[in-house]
Length: 126
Image (cartoon, rainbow, N blue to C red; front, side, top):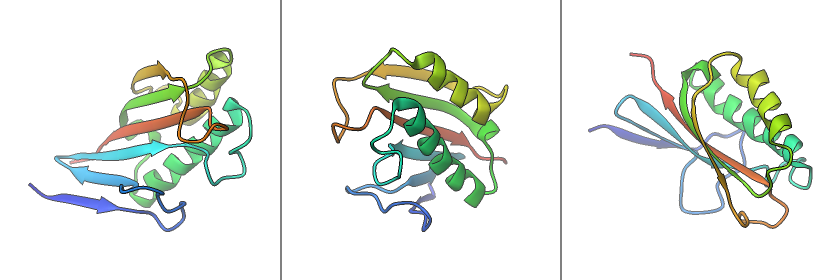
């Protein structure tokens, strides 16, 4: 099995023992992204969602892929009251090619100011 791990130069270097992505078995697995280290890190959940999806877009473009290639996302949130607005942001990025999705409410993320984290699985073209 061929497995490759990659960090992307236009994104903040991961602060732990992980890579931005791992490619294996026809999929690109994206680590969980937050707005940490971006101008939105102290913003509301909507601004943080936009920041995260821009980071994911950076990876997709670097791999010559688009949001339509994302087949699964897992979303961790610390608050539920603005999910409608978060969904609107997601629609702007995904259009009508929505992935399978799991949403989990958590007590907190790695930093207290972070309100959302998104990880994704991307299907690679054959």
